[in-house]
Structures are given as structure tokens and as C-alpha cells.
Amino acid sequence: MEMEIQSLLEKLLDTNDAMSRCAASAAQTTSVTQKLARHRDILHEFTQEFRRIKGNINSMREHAELLSFVRDDINEYKASRSMSPKKQLLRERAAIHGSIAHIPH
Image (tube, rainbow, N blue to C red):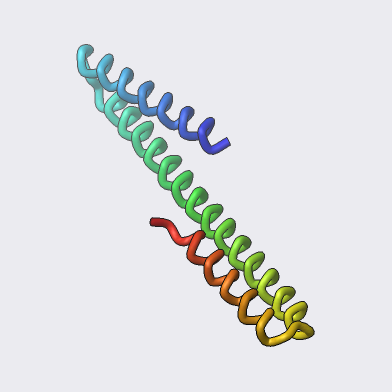
């Protein structure tokens, strides 16, 4: 869906550019200039809104992933309470290595 919206915004930009070129080659009236400006404003508003929504979705996705990791840690902690201290240390070490693997390089 993101790619489709991005494609549509690019098509709208191309259309606005084509309208501007046509208007530049013809005698421009104030009305035409105002309409072109309005179309550019609308494109700008759509693009800003798209970026805002995309950022919100990414933030919500990251939040959900973080909560999933926390739930997994809680469940792991509950399961490890019945383990021997040596097994607990080994499990903790594995969790640390798993977390390091998720860090972008």
C-alpha cells in the first residue's frame, strides 16, 4: 500500500509539472496561476500527510516489537525461576547474544 501511495504521489507530481509546462508556454492568467499554485499546495499537503502517517505506523510497529520482546523476557524470567543458577546464567548469556544480533551494524 505504501508503494502504491508513493507511486500515486509521483504521478500527481508529474501531472503538476506537465500542467506548469503547458501554462508556461501559453499566456497565463491569474486564474491559471492560482490553480497551479493550489495544485502544488495540495500535492505538498498530501506528501506531508503521507510522511506523517508513515512515521506513525513505523513508530507503532517498533513499539509493538518492543512490547513483544518485553513479554518474551517476562515469560523467560518466569520459566527461569525454577532453573539452577548455572542454567540461568547460560540463558542470560544467550539472551544478550540474541540482543546484540538485533543491533544494526
